[in-house]
Image 1 (cartoon, one colour):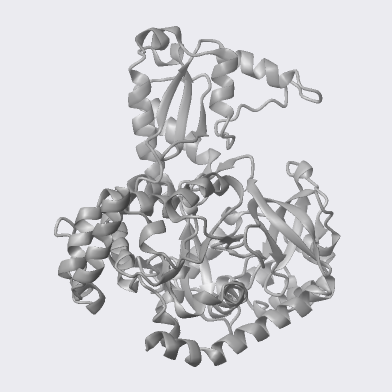
Image 2: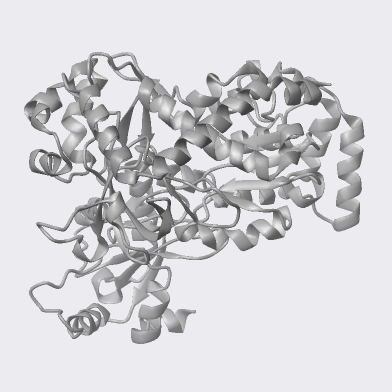
Length: 566
């Protein structure tokens, strides 16, 4: 009955969403004109802000004017203005007609996290992008119209700023204000986002989701989360089945009292429990491919390092189509994919104003800067955003490749974070954070590392390794101690790294003790490359390359004492 009501009651909503798609496609036919109109609108929106007056943005008429008035910058350039916003001084960065709703949190390139302002206008743009994505996905998979969704969102009210605005995750805000009819499609209650303990939060999400055989789509940002959930569900299958049968929640976890009173939790379902028991008896495990037979779509990131998890998704969830979310971040959505199984999407030209720096010119003091319509297929670029939240020419440090054009608008695929950022599961670990963490641990004990590198490695779960030379440690056992304490420091500095570590999606930082002289030989090999020089060599304290550690050990070896001990 509910599914029928949802299907027919949602006719108006679907029509409105399809109009959004038609408008978006019209915008893509003249990318340059659309982008110029967006830029003019964004400049008017925040024209009476302190930032706008300080940078004389009232004088800006063209993209060239914008480049003359505002430098390419990262969050640190905006942090003083955002700090004033958090104190309640909305005029620091926003226009008088803007309504500030919250701050969404994400890890920054320093020890402090980034607090990105979310305005009413930004939220509307954000939701419109998801509507365009969503209706196209549903039209491609009509079974979704009468099935349910498992989506994991964050808490949008983790704490309040001194000015009284909530800080947290924008997905939680969107979920909280969702249309009541649409909200009936979601299997995991909003309250689950309030659970602080990661194990309890994931168990509760599974408790609600596994009980529902009508799930047609699973959604979360990083596929590593879905892999983690599938493994966790199998590991706790006995408890889950018992809770579903009895209408309870595992007593070993602590939950908000309101959650335990929800009808979806209190409902006893011995029939579903028996179905799950038969699945376990038949296959020996309990995985989504079994308990969600109608699963029609997985919605996750597919680009960059996320691609490493896709084979695991197939193992646990079955041969189910995957549709990329598109390139998006706390600062804004950049692309909208329109098909399954591809990592590229159409640039969201109607929402933000975009500029691009060719990848080869990233370190230039005066790089060439291009507008969206000027990109070339097959070329890589750093993407810059000017948004309704008061960020101008913001360097999000994402490297994208132009894969072609839709109309006159480029299609882009995400490749990786810039050379100084690594992200396996969305943690966005920066080189400056790594340097700060190592120094904070090593310096008080008088450990002097000639060089070191933190590099990612693949595993189940993946993680990072700390590469150091044996002679710098004095005592080889010091390597494990150093790695353990650097790991703790990184969790404190980077909120997303800490969350992934606590939830088990990242393994602990592991030490690799290299043969003495490795870094000197490594530097010489780098300096011998064409165009390299001694003066310009910079040792990588963080490498985003998954093969970095294996290649280094293969080329130069590890400490002989470690080999003998192993």
